[in-house]
Image 1 (tube, each protein chain N blue to C red):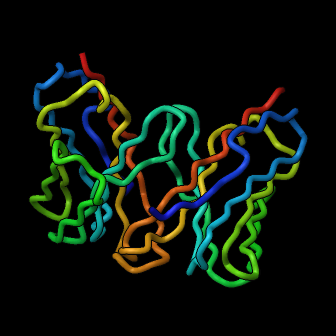
Image 2: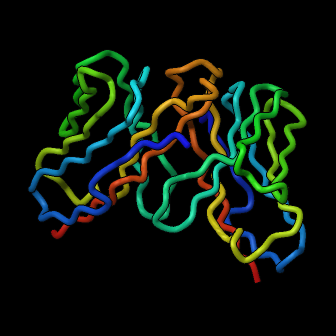
Length: 112
Length: 114
């Protein structure tokens, strides 16, 4: 079935270090979304990328969509303890425009 | 504030005893989704409604059913829960079925099976 691969599975960093998670698809995507799920919480929408090569920033978070629209990344500069959680990318489903397929997620933990 | 509300937050049921989870939304969104999320895994879509149109995922077990009596409410029925059905169940909504629509999640119901 349709899959969106996400790496790494886990990342443990010192507070203040940077963090990056990568998302890859075997097919061209019309768009990609990113969600954050805090421990014990629910996924929260962060951003959506639509254009080839698009780069968007939200404070310390930088989101990129690849030129071929097959990959995406989320980079956090100078991590803080509030960044702890699992970051999921999500791509539109093949069979229906109303559904999304989540990547496997990257769990970020931080040493204070 | 407009939101997606799931009740209860925690549900315990017995093996084989039917259980219903509920979701309501004040966003007036057209689409409602049910996901199953197990520990350290991504949410897995079970089915979704676009208005009254039901869309089942091919690999969703027949044991799982859903009802959407009106725009605001959606229910997940598990007819005969097995131990493997213990999980977090997340309800989400989106404004329309078109692409580029963010999904808004409820806090989830954590289901335990005795």
